[in-house]
Amino acid sequence: MSQAVGSAAPSGPVGAPGRPAKRVTRRRAETRERLLAAAFEVVAERGLGATTVENVCERAGFTRGAFYSNFRTMEELFFALYEQRANELLLRTRAAISAVLDNAEGTGVGGDNLVEAAVDRFLTSANVPEDRSWWLVTTEYLLYAARGPVAAERLGVLRRQVWEEFVNAMTTALRRAGRTSTVSPDLLVRALAAVHDGAIQQSYADSGSVTYDELQRLVLPLVIHGLTRLEGA
Image 1 (cartoon, rainbow, N blue to C red):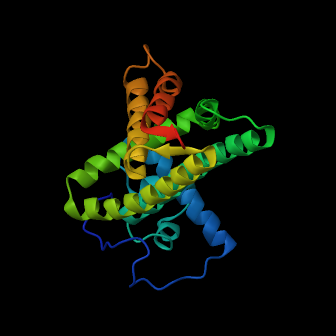
Image 2 (image 1 turned 135 degrees about the vertical axis):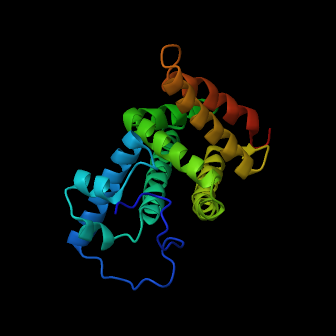
């Protein structure tokens, strides 16, 4: 019987005690990565509730045995996928900020142009089709979690962990840029995330009038300038 997310299979936080640790070989790691990549594609195409173990295995080119040697349930796979993709976005953000700040420190360039340069670098590194798929996947699971308190709790724990990393990255970036947030770092990051998410939603829902890139380049610098100030100003 196909097992979709939400089926009555055993569940628990990712990495929770109770499942014996297995040695991660290179082949096993590659299998896991292929399953995650396949799940990413299938959930974006079909939706979370309609995705089964068979769908993922077929797309990845594996048997059900390969799936269950890596994940107990579809829900566990999704949490692993969420963590992987969120960390990739975090790394992309850090790389964009570091590249701009390192260049500024080497050339002596500073001031408000740093904000625009960082936003431009981040958007230049974006993979818009990939971002669209990730938006579809996260939207699917947010709806799923909103209807189930257990899933909502698990997703909340993971999101808070990722969120803390973004807050730390933003705090470090502002310090290096000589800027200070006029609100809590958490609120600043949430405001930037709201712009990012809203820009994606509007550009995909009404693609004929505005693009993701245009909205981000217009609004992100305004939010950063509006909620931060130069140190000593």
